[in-house]
Image 1 (cartoon, rainbow, N blue to C red):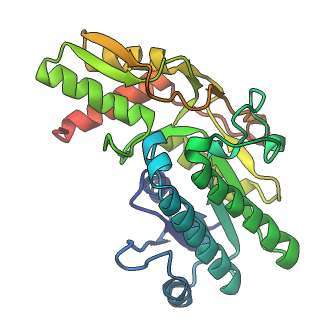
Image 2: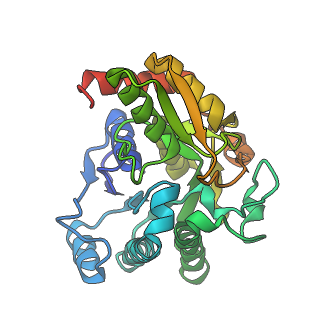
Length: 310
């Protein structure tokens, strides 16, 4: 991937896509191709084919997806399955039809079985039942991996896949109805501090363990893989550190400066008890995460305050 190559970032307005855009621009790429969902509906095969015919990208970062947390995944099950299947199918197929040199498909750690042994290695895919609350999203992402593998096997396409752990960073979603745990807690604690609330309620027991990665670390990993990796096996991308949801809440409260009570709503689901990814394969290639969780959250919160957030 040279600086003059035409590079398409699908999902450029999202958290992951915008981070990849920042990384590509920092490296000096001259021809970055984007299209909003109003300009090209990636669920529509004809629109996608016409877009690829017109733009002729040589490299594709497939970061477009319908995303959300436990609640959104569980409530909008048909939307998460249909939209994500259509987006990935259309972009991957168009990349084949229009002779894209290389494509990177981005999935999620939710592809692994609910009770996968920890840390989760790439070989554990399809070895057990999925977490029911986000099964539709997980199935769609597994299908994307298999599509990339199939186009490689049948047509020799250099389509690769990477599975990030839980992400946070600029352009995250802070809507409490469909956001992930870290941004949801950041908004909750910020609101509680601003409004002088005596307590903040968190879903579940707080016992599940989670791994978090700043999206700028992921973007660096994605560009790294586009330069240095061309194998069928998808790769995990994580920080190799984990924290309980309870401790995450305490850390965010400290960063925000909230000193009220933290209450756990035990009627709400915990989700998967532990999710730590084994990132040794990408680490062995020469990539390591750089941004610690505390540093990353402080940076994100400072940026939000600068934007007069909420």
